[in-house]
Length: 97
Image (cartoon, rainbow, N blue to C red; front, side, top):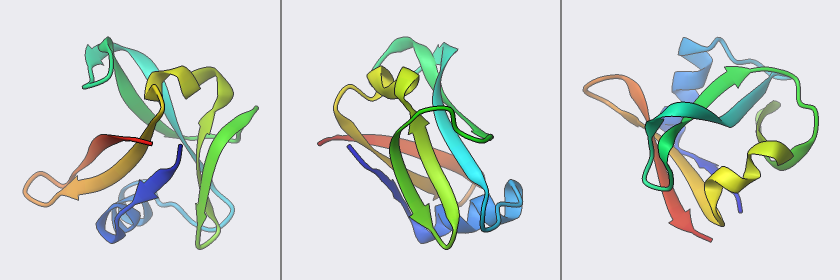
């Protein structure tokens, strides 16, 4: 599995989360909401140092990652991150790896 970010998503992280080289940004399963993969769970994001990385993508010194404990959520799918330009919100899509 891999994490794929569009140029617009990278820009969003720099502007909205003030991401900079050396930061770690985590994608994690959270209880509540829904996703195409699991009803009752949705994807969260936060700036946080990792405990046990399962998947990581590093771009310009910023580390985007998924912890081992959240790996189940992705059910063998790659995570693609983009931005809805009208709402300026992240869009998450999942493609079978």
